[in-house]
Each structure stands twice: as structure tokens, then as C-alpha cells.
Length: 352
DNA sequence: CACATTTGACCCAT
DNA sequence: ATGGGTCAAATGTG
Image (cartoon, rainbow, N blue to C red; front, side):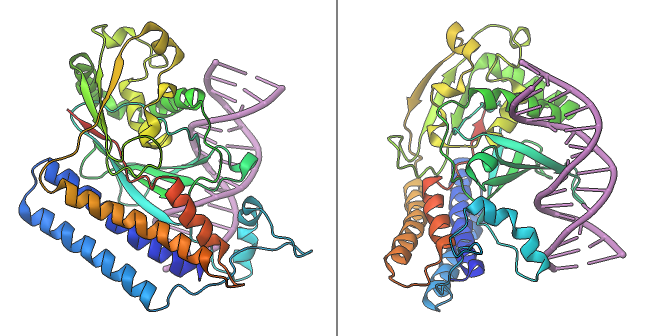
């Protein structure tokens, strides 16, 4: 399969899944029927496109694997390294699967969510016509393990409480059991990135800290023991938040936003890893997972979402079952990784 | 000292 | 030509 078409299929499936996720969020927050109708239309369109792509034979099998001069296959990172050189020789840039996740911050704070992945910022750029700069991150294990996962984080135009996180590629690295270090670094990073424009929001966040909050994860397709859809509630200390250092307060208002981006939004995120040593020892807050399914219509949407996940999984299985000598390793890898990475549309929603 | 971020310059697709 | 994405030297931090 051509790299382009495989990523198109995945993109389309991703789009549909994201729409479904958004629809669910909209339903939950009581959006108008028209809004929901439009989203359903988008979802159907995504399904249609995907089906047509597959049935039209767009997914031809081709070898995306790169070979060294001696004929042995090169590791992915070495392939990535040579991309620029390839570009100059006229070859197309490899399009990694890409999907966008919106991280919404309600009037309440978010939480520092770790999915075990650590990210390293490699750039920031002002985007034309956008109020806020876009941050560029890649997996910290890019050099050591050749993990090509990347993401871009940008504050939404219309709603400063919403961040658009665009993931590119998926993790091929081993998930680190401890994300404490990176999480705390991420906190600082966010503080720097967001700077002073957070003042007013921080006020709200600080306020919410003392009244408690609810964190909701959406559309999770975990193959882990975690439920596919879950929400967790947190109780907070009555300790004045101002008296706590951001580094030691995992729920630091300035750290919350970006950690959702930086560390990701995995459902397994709420493990003990996301409490910094200081807070876990001082027992500042407790967590109690309470599995909640949304009412009205939510089940159908979840079914639609899991449908997409199954398609992706099936596509991988199907391709690997094909005994073609021209297997596209890129697609295999991508699809499998999408599955493995739990397709992080599970943007954390922060509800007041 | 090792590793992270910042930021201006550069590359490349459009 | 332009804008988005990436590189890499400088700088910061623990």
C-alpha cells in the first residue's frame, strides 16, 4: 500500500473517530440538535470515504521499508534521519499518521495526566493568523529507541481553554513506568510556554482547586485493564494552593494544561506515576476511579468509536495476513501502533 | 555535567 | 515567495 493512501485511510478513520468523540462531548454538554446532526454527517462521511478507499483498491501493498546499501533493512530512526536527503532527491516526505485531539479546559482545572510517554520540545513557532504560537514536541526516546511520535500543541483561537493537540506518528518506544521526572519537567515547560497570559485563568483554576474537580477521559480504547470509558474524581486538600510549589503540586494550575498535552491523555494515565513524590507522600488528595458511561446516545457513539478502532485493528490484521512479498511495513507499524497507542482522541476534558 | 528548552536560521512543500 | 516544520547553537536547570 502506498504510504500516502494508508495514512489517508487512517486519517479518515481518525477524523471519524474524533467527530464521534466530539459528538459525545457535545451531547454531554447539551449542544443543539443541529450541531450534533452536523457531526453525525461528518462521521458518516468519514466512514464512507474509508470504505470507498478500501474497496476501490487504494490500499495497494508496497514496500515502505528502507534498505541499507547491503540490503539489510534500516531501523525506523535511521530512515527518519535520511528523510531530508530523500526529499532532496525528489522523494515524497513520509506522511506519518496524524490526528488531532482537543484538550478542553472547562472553568475548572485539568490534571497532570501521564501516559508514561515523555516529550521533548524541539521548536515553537508563531503561526500566521493565529494568536498563539504552536509548540513542537517529539518523543524523548527518539534517539535512544527511534520512536518517531510527535505532537503539536496550540491554544485554540476561539476558546483559550481549549488546546488543539495534533499527534503525528505513534510511539514505538517502550512506555516508561515512571513518568515523574518528565511530568515535572513538563510542568515547568508549560509554565514557561504559557507565561503570563494565564493569569486570569489561573485565578479560576486556583479557585476550583479548593472546591474539587472532576476529570473526564473520553473515548478510550484501551486494551489495558482500564475501562474503555472512565472518569475519575479527585478530592483536593483545603490547603491554600498558593502555598504549594508548582513542582510539588501535581495539580498546579499552570502545569495542568500542558501536561495533558505533553504527557498525553492515556486512560492508564491515572496511575500512581502522576503524583509527584512530594504529593504522594503528603497524601494531599485521593483518587477514586468511578466508571461512568454517558447517558442518552452515548452508547451508540461509543459503539461507533469502537467500530473505528476495530477497523484499524482489522486493517492491520488483514494486511499482515496478506502473504504478499510487497508488504508495507510502514502501514503495519502505523496501524498496530495506533492500536497500541490507544488512539489518543481521549483528550482530557476538564469539567467544572 | 547531562539533559532540557529557547530561538533564530534554515529547509522544503505549496 | 511564503509559511510551516525542523535543526542546532546558545542557554537554562537540577
